[in-house]
Amino acid sequence: MDTTSTQILNSNKEESKRTYRHWTTLEDRKLLQLRNEGMKFRLIAKELQRTPISVEKRYRKILQNQWGES
Image 1: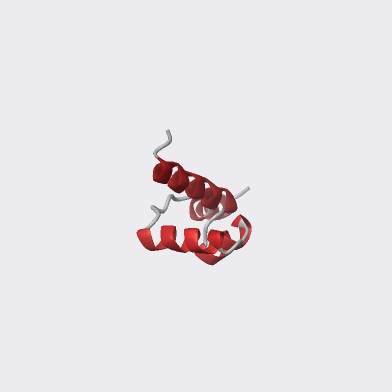
Image 2 (image 1 turned 90 degrees about the vertical axis):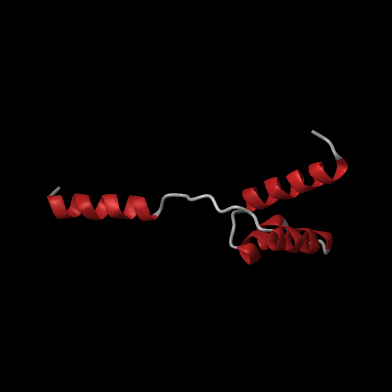
């Protein structure tokens, strides 16, 4: 593989790296609203531009904090 191909591959890897985005209060509210309306996690994830697993984890964390459980 030549140098240019290697640089392109490395560049693509850097662009596809996952970056964490903190949840905003508005996103939390939207998540709770949509879930209370019966929407599935995968559809909420599309709406919020997040992964389904991150949406589900956030939802469970919010519920846990609301009820004071650890």
